[in-house]
Image (cartoon, rainbow, N blue to C red; front, side, top):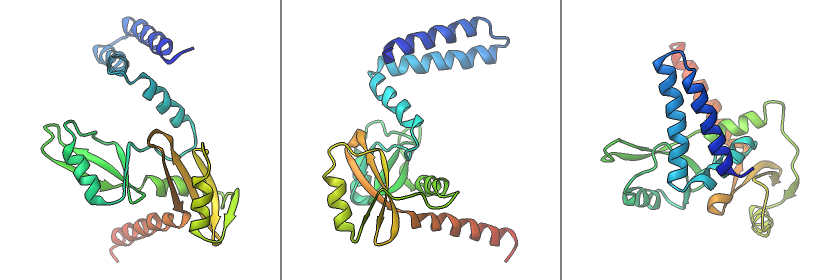
Length: 200
């Protein structure tokens, strides 16, 4: 079944449930869901929505809409957006940032986001997962990763004995490698909060 047929069937189901809704609030929420599907359809984003749903079902890290080498590049891009993508994720020097913008679009900012730290923490909650490949240097790993025409969304590798997550962002054709050690930043923040909470 195509994404277009799925959207139509979902709207029909939501419409039936809306007719049987018990309260005005419930009716409005169902109407909101119907409108959201129309928004996707009418703005030509059905295929993007289909890709998003596949991504959500996978165990890969959260997707991003753009990648930049420097913060300056990212800020120039954000300033040039007539309608900034509020709450979307981007990579700056392969670090996650969330785009924040006010409704009137007068204020825009890029804030570091711990998405990947949480993702790696979840992956390692039962110990280190096995690596599919091992390399002595980052250059060797980059050569291996870049020579793959269609790499998996995520692959666990080792570089110099350390675990890395190699991620392929298909929508922007970007490859990035994240050391598992970044989860230590998350642990350090939690420890600081605990110490602050205990008054130390």
